[in-house]
Image (tube, rainbow, N blue to C red; front, side, top):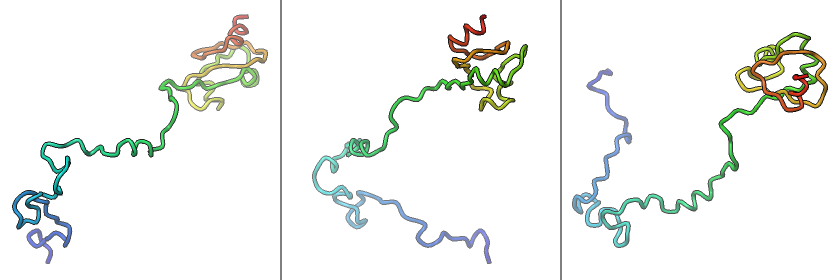
Length: 138
């Protein structure tokens, strides 16, 4: 019958700690599993865990370059604005997102293009290139 007082740990699951330096009868006496001479056998020597660290560092594949924390602009061309918007409409990131022209409304948007702007629209919360900015001012 299974009850709390009859539960035992499975065989081999309980391993005793290595008690070092407690006499030769323990099996870990005299040199206390440190070997004979050398730096590692002396007391007070730690920080030798990083032996061969340079070799390990050289083996690790590294991602080169620099990744900015600032998000990249989502690019919309003047051509798409001409085709998807009518006169008097306002172009906002949410309007562009609803028409599925950009992936996210929260990321910054920039209008680029060398084409002529044929519709008269207002811009809100959108960056533009210099060439597009001059067209909007006209």
